[in-house]
Amino acid sequence: MKVILRENVPNVGKIGDVLDVADGFGRNYLLPRSLATQANERNVRQMDHNKRVAAARLAKARAKATEESKQLSGVRLSVAKHTGDEGRLFGSVTVREVADLLAEKGFLVDRRDIGVPDNIRTVGEYAVTVKLHHDVVAKLTLEVTAAE
Image (cartoon, rainbow, N blue to C red; front, side):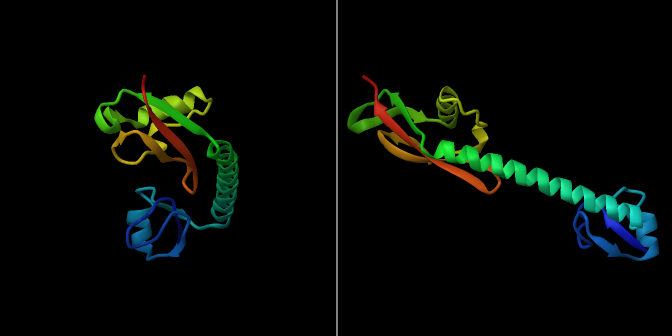
């Protein structure tokens, strides 16, 4: 029996794979659980169409993220924090603060997509990464200064 997998099935295949499986396995396990559909001509065409649409959507999202990455790469953020002896901060600079600074500049970025070096607790410059797409990352500079 030929089937098209609708979900990843361990030790069998991944989404979209067209497989030749035993009749009983397909009829009694894959089809009732909606893990696969029969691989007839109509379903194969539909799967190909869905793949093309998904690829176009992914390319469009990647292009948008690349454009936004070009805009973000030149951004320089600055934050003033209260410091103690030797330029050490009272507390640290958090990802939420970086997200707020980006929002002030007009970039709405989810805080979970921002990569800040661990424990920014001293005055200085730090490299911050912003993940805009699974393969597009923007790098910007965060300057931490002493508050007056």
